[in-house]
Amino acid sequence: MNKLIPPFTKETAKAKVQAAEDAWNSKNPEKVSMAYTMDSKWRNRDLFFTGREAIVEFLNDKWSKKLHYKLKKNLWSFTDNRISVRFEYEWQDGATGQWYRTHGNEHWEFDKDGKMQIRDMSANDIKINKSERKL
Image (tube, rainbow, N blue to C red; front, side):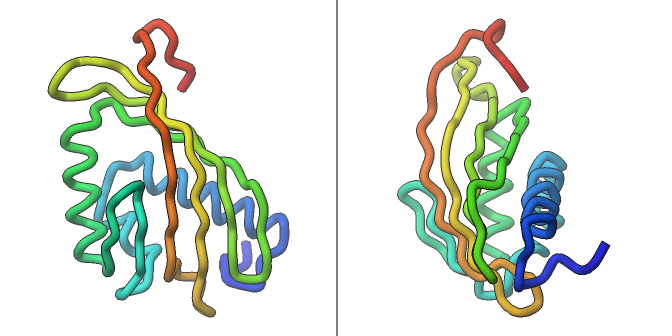
């Protein structure tokens, strides 16, 4: 497959989304961080931070608390260098044992080399019973 760099086609945008899903489901913060520019700017809910080091720190913290994390991303729309996705993931709170399904949207902007330079994420958590898991 061609490198997943802008300008995106429907096929390369879908492949970029699948690559992101696969990386996040690895729960390997260093691996995930390599998809982002060194100075990538993030908004994740109410958190704002910049750079790969901060990304790794954020993901280490996230996956130490959100156990049994499983994510599904779907392409929503794309332009030459931007992609929007809808996602859901399921996880168990490590402190309480409560299961959740998180629904949200992400808007991504890429540099010319296909590294994500901006990630803007909004999401809501819904309590579920373990028997209600879909992923």
